[in-house]
Image (cartoon, rainbow, N blue to C red):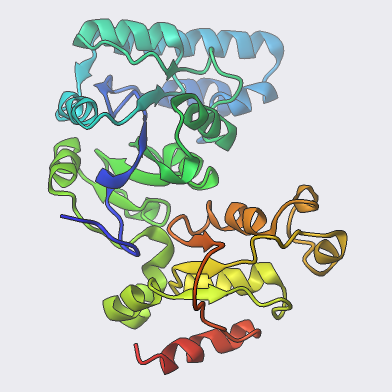
Length: 327
């Protein structure tokens, strides 16, 4: 099956980032004892909140954490479907890595126990400068496997995985969990890893996370046709360029034409202060592409188009403009 915008398939991702525990190896870790002992039972982020502990208690907590993780690694079992996922990735020549909050010693031991050869790009909390859900961890991993963030997919089994992916502008797949409260973070959820592998083989087509609302309101025909439109970005949109772009992209518009020679000037920034100051001096096409890619990764920015549509300058008029196109 050929997947065309505005629809998406996990099988179309160019790079995969995989969680370790619960996705590749099942160790059934229970952190409740550590939370009770060091955080009064509250659901603390063990690593990030460790800095709130006194130095000696932080050291003791981290030591107990490693001991708990290692005990889990010693009895690790492969998640059903995990080896099939890796086989599928290798067969399709898709680069992948493992990115975990576990320490590397635990990951290596768990891999030995389940009989898995780890990919060269494998990171735990002790061999990377950042730890998910910090987006810098995911962005660094994407760079290491040579894939743009918007073309990456993170596969995880916990909320932190989904949060990290969303913050980094990546697709997010939740596996091995049935947590309706987390659905707003994920592009798609598969209760079992084996379900996910089946979806990859079938090239299952889904509505992307960013288009759920417009799809629910307007339906498939609207979204499919809007994706074929290329709007010329107005010289002076209302209220600002970023708001105009967000409005148009959220309605499913698939492409945006920008003069290839147009440069983002200091005066442009004063009109559009939501853009980063680093945009000044760069081509508008690059600035807009950088703005859209983490938010609407399927939206295209083009600098060649014979007849782009002259959409309304006022972002509030875009919906009616699309409607008049007889969708």
